[in-house]
Amino acid sequence: MRFMMLMIPLGYETAPPEIDLDPERVAAMMKYNQALKDAGVLITLDGLHPPSSGARVSFATGRPVVTDGPFTESKEVIGGYWMIDVASRAEAIDWAKKCPASANEIIEIRQVQEMSDFSEEVQQAAATFEAPQGWGRALR
Image (cartoon, rainbow, N blue to C red; front, side, top):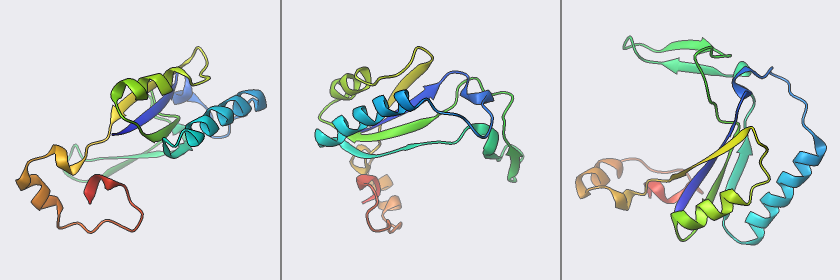
């Protein structure tokens, strides 16, 4: 079962485009990332730049509208993620609990949808998409 663990650093929604990272915290996080890799559960991971350097495309009017960050209405934003492949939701939670997160960080755990989760009709509709080489199992 694939799960995405989403890092939500509280206050990141107002962080400037360029942030200074604490080398000790980075080292602790790299040790955690290595443990995920060594256990054979890590698929991929990335950190994300603050929303102040991002953009949102909304479709409320039926046409795309681009809004540059920061996004004043945001209360929580994603700072990074891990994609892991584990046997259960409980195992994903166990891995999240081992993260050297600080008091202002939250990890949200979400299971990835697999095509087998959907009806045959939905699977047939999705079968028209040819997934790129090396892409996740979800659309294969």
